Amino acid sequence: MAQPAGQARPPLNLDDFTQALVRRKLLSNDKYVSGIEADTEVFRGSGRLATKAFSVDIG
Image (tube, rainbow, N blue to C red):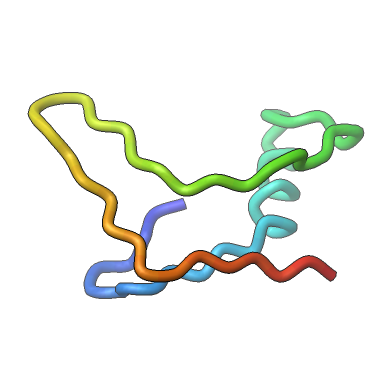
């Protein structure tokens, strides 16, 4: 799931995301989310993640 260009605050609906994985048979339907994190993975060079706010709505 890629962030649209120029969008500073990308929304992510985890239900939509996990159901897409289930449909593609990349995730079993009996799994559940046990935690939520935000990070970056740098393959070359250096990187930085600047976070001003992080929130999660459950329900």
